[in-house]
Length: 376
Image (cartoon, rainbow, N blue to C red):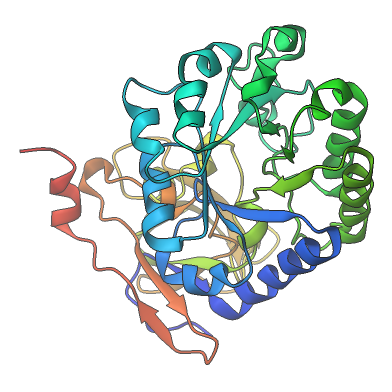
């Protein structure tokens, strides 16, 4: 069913979200671990009341995300940054109970201060384990010259008396083989350091709600790890919690021809789906197939002035016409959190589909949203 909602708009399906959260709850209970929402991938406060019932808190990639977690989600707030600016750690100790540092150098600068303020201290380690299944080196935290985490050869220089949480993040949209492989790699490679901490955070990228993800294998790996090291285990998925839970609704606003049929949409790769260009990846569309698979093929494009604002080539069983609605699938992770207003393009609005099927619109983005970010 194509719903009557102004486009472009991201629509979260709450029933599907609950289904995904039940997977997280199963892992938490069976493996006796903590699961946090990584707000860098998904930050929709209207969904937080439901998510709060299934998760242990939020993890942030900076001060403002941490503030959002504290203000709108509650429960535990964890925060990590590759580098903290002067004064930032002091402010974070007021809102976050767990503060992670990227290096021995950052730990030396700020660790004692954060510890004295009562925070649990984490150190991110580069485990040298690459299993990012999307985007190659661009999305691999352990790629050569990565800025993420202290390298193994320098861990002997760390003041481990300051560290409570051994933190690694090496995955991106990984299946259970990646999750289990990372857990086993860390156990085998870093045992002397694991014996000095009280918790291990295996980061994000665990795509626990993909159809082929073996949840039982993950549970067994966490159980074995906890038995061996007697530590708390933390996971912090973002996309893995909201995969396949919502769509981006768009409308065809004009048709063009230049050596092929082109459909111009009110949704844009540049402004509404930047990962289409950055990864790149190809979003699915309800009722559409690959180019030339069906009778009518179109290049779908946004209406910004960026030449590369191309979503992709798709085929349809009937010709497209202005006013036709297109629904892009799996559009909840790393989408609306990354949108922008290039060219003054309106932000896509946000909506939720409640479990009874009713739609609630959460925003009315317009000129004010564009103007506010340009200063006085």
